[in-house]
Image (tube, rainbow, N blue to C red; front, side, top):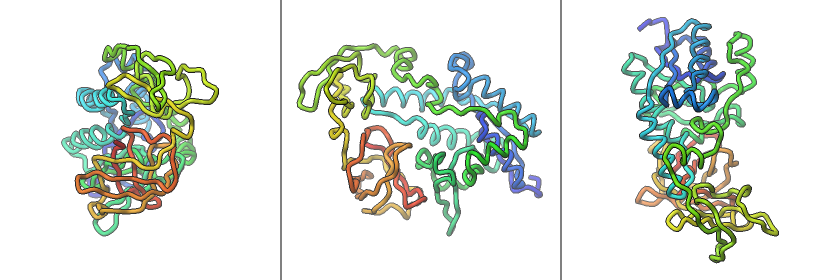
Length: 359
């Protein structure tokens, strides 16, 4: 190791401005930096998915252009087989169970901070880094996960499954800056991606059409079923429950005097249950597969700010932990669209305590 540096870092470069600036910020801090782009699909699929997909040819080319501009090594690491087995199959299975998956969380756990970290260590790197908007702080020999300075871009919700072992080897250089500040720095450095737009959708479904993806990739067939209200009254028909998600209001296909929302899905009966706005609200729910950032946080009961989706404003709730690794969560006031399959993440102000999956 070059003892004039703080260590060797492999930065996961997507070809966007955030991961590109992560490289620059780490170099400024004295790290020895290289970049790598993860190929999560085979080349044919990457081309079909388009320029905004997770590992499109443009993404690889943009990452390589930035690496050349800065003067660092750049690698392409093929993780497509594991990505398909873990993230894509999980996405399919959850949807066909009538749940709403969150593939970004699973990808972070299994791929970015799992397999990618393993590959980086095997290549001789001390750390990995990404362009995520979150902050890692160390105190009393343990790491804490904290929200980013730019609250609008904060991604801590997607990172609640991080472990202490991973955080020891992980850097989030962008977490202390705002998006605007990062873009200004990128322009000052004349990075070729300084004005590049970012995708807001799931990386492997850039058109956001989940049902089309399931039908085309997994040959999921449409099947006629009923749309009912909570009392079991038939209001209409649909072509497959997997075309809907809990909380959905548009494109339900019903004419009604008041707006209707999807309030539940029954995969076994191929039924979509709808109701008016008050029926979308819920106050209590169960969380399974709990994970805590620190083992010290695993208590029987706590009061926390809880987020039930990435764009949900965290609300106060009582969290009662059960002996079997589940928890009962009760909000102080009803919240909209508590959705099975999504994550519930617990916060103490700006610090992530842990979380689990809504059952």
